[in-house]
Image (tube, rainbow, N blue to C red):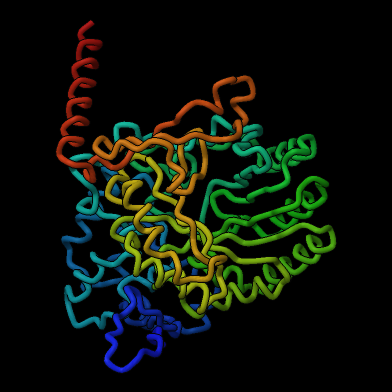
Length: 476
């Protein structure tokens, strides 16, 4: 279906819309096209146990899956990235792997190489060394915990950043690891370039401390239950935590964060999980609490019939909504047509509400994914007017020490040097005694390669001066 032009008088020239809407039928790609899965049955594919047991964790397993369909040069590129640049170890569920180069028919050795390299989902789930920039692989101000969430822990894993909202990181693992993960400091296995931090307390003690803080802090009404990914927590333990959370009188909104709704929908379709969610949703309704699921889909190709079934199953439990918080990534979705395709596919195909698109955070080795604030503003302009207002995703910049800001809320913006200034109207948990927190301007930085030559030269000089200063310190 496409947008029909309005009726016009004879002789009137009617121009096409910049974006032509069409409803797309969801398709589950044929997983048997990959040699390693040629004998996998539908029952196996739809089993969460099979999915978990057959995740791709390294280049050896990827070779076994793809055979000779992808050239050896790709694997060398991948192995170099894992050894030198990757901030996340490989972990790709079969469901996600099956949406990479989904419609290219294998035709012999090397026939999937080009499509595999170009695929948007591959670019963020299985990054290779040649994807990354060599001029500025990391921004000079990139940090492992770019949002300073650990600085705002009020109990281990509980970030109190906003006045009425907290983030509860129940566990540090996921069913899948995204290359651009903003919590790369804590989540997942260590890589050669990043030794991960570890949660030190026992899970039961950490969760008790979180609930105790919430009960003692009546100003908090909204809790994001995350990690990692709640799909990696055994259901009885997650349900126990949620039941206790719903007993906290001041909690009015609970959001469960799980990329696995898309990456491993089989988990959310499992009988025990569906039954457990019905119990939790019923309890939330009885206590007047809004319960929702937030997932993370970055491209329309990720939305398949199984994802739609999982979303429908969760909505049928009685939760309020399933919403999507994607990440704006260059080479993946950072153009208006791709974002509109994603939003309509979520909305029409799976009843998942487009909600936020975060600009990729300033973590190490992420510059090839990041875009400028100006580019994000332009994208917000171009996606307006096509979707219902309630389903038009807001593009936000998560500014260090500030929080989420719509990209047009910028206070100052030096486009030559790519430095934007942002203000806020609340104090975080570490600013209770800071009288300047609400008047200070906080900086955010565009990727240097997106700047005009003058701006790139300025940053190069700053970097050279820093190296000279470091050399002098070492000489002493």
